[in-house]
Amino acid sequence: MSVKNWLWSTHVQDETRARGESIFVRFGVQYLTDAVAWALAIVAAVVFRYDFVVSRVHWVPVLFLCLVVIVLQLLLGWTFGVYRGRFTYGSFEEARAVAYTVVTIALFSSVPVVIFSAQIGVPRSLMLISGFIAYGLMGAVRYLKRMYVTQRMRPDNAQPVLLLGAGFMGSLMVRRMLTDRESEYIPVGFLDDDRSKRNLHLMGVPVLGRFKDIVKVANSTRATALVVCVARADSNLLQRVTTMADSVGLKVKVLPELDDLNDGRTTLKDVRDLSIEDLIGRHPVDTDVASIADYLSNKRILVTGAGGSIGSELCRQIAKFGPAELMMLDRDETGLQQTQLQISGHGLLDSTDVILADIRDADALERIFVARRPEVVFHAAALKHLPMLEQYPDEAWKTNVLGTLNVLRAAMTIGVETFVNISTDKAANPTSILGHSKRAAERLTAWAGKETGHSYLSVRFGNVLGSRGSLLPTFQALIAADKPLTVTHPDATRYFMTIPEACQLVMQAGAIGSPGEVLILDMGKPVRILDIARRMIAQSGKSLEIIYTGLRDGEKLHEELTGVGEAGAHRTHALISHARVLPIDPSRLDRSEWQRRWDDDQAETAIVGIERGSLGGVNR
Image (tube, rainbow, N blue to C red; front, side):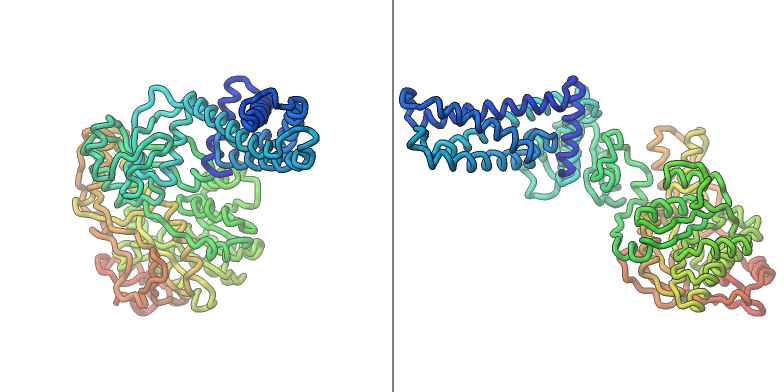
């Protein structure tokens, strides 16, 4: 059954239950209607055949034939699913099933009629003519019934909306809106730039113009909102739509993910207001599912930092590919519980899929890896707050540098085939403790890839929207508290990406990366933090002040994705670039030299993992 008919069927069944009808009663009435259609068709056909001279009709064989056909209609209608609730009123699927039933009956009953026509006094063409008439009557009844049900389902007191896009998603949404009495929206027209759709009507809703006609169409229809029904709407399109919609006072609303719509997991209540995440971080991702499945399906997979924002989303997406075992490791038991809730539907924390451990504990990690023997590792555990690590650089060293080394060594001990280290854009030309520590982690991962020859690689990207403690939740909390928003510098820019998009590309990178590489995700254009603050204040409807605090120690005005001197930068995927950093042997790491160099010149983009006795950085 198609998505459209599934949705329609759901509405029809709800309507049936609301009227207190049983499925048996409903389809019993439908069968009786079809039986009457056959009787009328046969009588009409024989009357037409004898030019309305009723006295020439042999009524006994005709009535007997009616009885036989009515019985066959029940048997074959059940066989073809007409009376088993498989199809919806007036759908193409139902029309096809009814056609199969009528044609089979007509052919089956025509054989004795043709052979014994002279003896029983029935015209040989009777069943051919009556078959066409019966099918027409059945179709007409179903069409009228569908029109009646559709009219009953139309929402009352709903706000008029325009739909941008008259394609698959547009047709899906207009059908939902018109067949849900609880819908908050009633569609009054479409906007679509496809010229071939300019005269199109979907369920009676017309295409009223192109997107550039939004002002004229909004004024003529008195619509209050614009629903974006474009499957792959990126941030650039949504920004343009918002600008145009704001000029005519239309609220912009967006749909859930296309996969959720196709699977029927959403309702009209999931149509939501445009968020800041949509405007700055919505990047369509073409995921090569086959290549991802090759290295994830039926494999034992371990994710460190599984209780965090990135780690938990990675676990959720990895679970879709059917791993043999998904091991979620973190030192935060509450975070693990939340992740388990998303994956397993419970947070009992009593199963082996959750592992409570700290990546700083090398011995514990080795025991876990030897006992559980993962084949693929995603290393997302890290400390990430720049100002905090500026105050406590030792913590960055212990977790981001030595913790990563502990995970790498445990993985190398048991021969892990694929190791993906989650890095950050702050590792490119680092100027902060966070950036230097993550740069060191990249170089250690490159060393492991060189030593093992396996796919040990790093993936680097910028800020993720919605992660704990990130920019947007901070701004939202300040707005909720009616406090001023703090921005470091009016010209400061950052790269942004949503968590699901970043995780999709991380998994893709794991499939295409080579040993020792750093894969850099395309984050689009950097966004001014000031613009985000202003837009969020505007969306809140409040009048709040913006305070400039100045750049903090180690903080850049503009982030970078590629470091100076990174060799071999090239692209094999539309949104992923490849580069290389120099590997560093763990035996040459020296914590005191690393700190001394940082203290001497923290503004200079130099080194990530100071080698004993030399600077050894790739940027020197």
